[in-house]
Image (tube, rainbow over all chains, first blue to last red; front, top):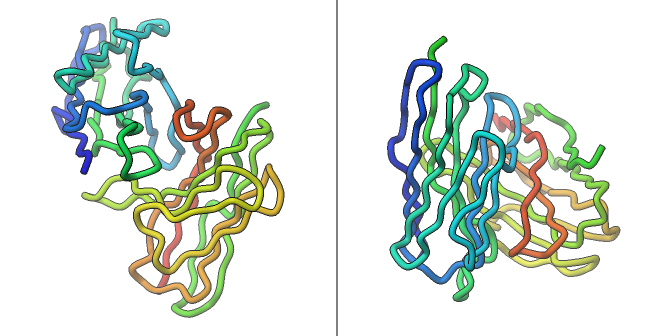
Length: 114
Length: 113
């Protein structure tokens, strides 16, 4: 059964720092990996989707990488801002049978201090 | 604006009183699904639908029903809610099926007393 782990569970950094959030998954048979942000009382906002054949995706100050063979993904946030404070979730879609839906990690709660 | 909407956003009810949470998307997506989010357990899929009149169980379907009579709507039905169904519920949709980018609604916070 696929398991997704996110490290660290919580992170607090001063504004302006570059930071890396980590995601690992146990089964490398995936279609894609998706990063989301979740704000309190709100839904999940899709940030980046990386197909299994891709190595990375970029959107503005965000860059996500994928190493499928080692079961790892990182989300790099450049020049962090207080508005980046949220919980970041990674999720995978398996290609080898089993669960139909996304398998989520438990998230990294990020606080950017002004 | 392309979006997934859910109603109600907040609901407090009592054990055994049937309720329906509605989900609607305006993106002509074929694939829709429901998740619940619980502290320490993360998000888990309840049911999904690959198209109109095609639904199937996810990881935690017990105590829930769904229907897909129209492409845009995918209601979640709790026929006899119990306190262990107190949770935050999300509806999601995707243009390219389960392997496509998933778009989530704003969530429905349900409390069953």
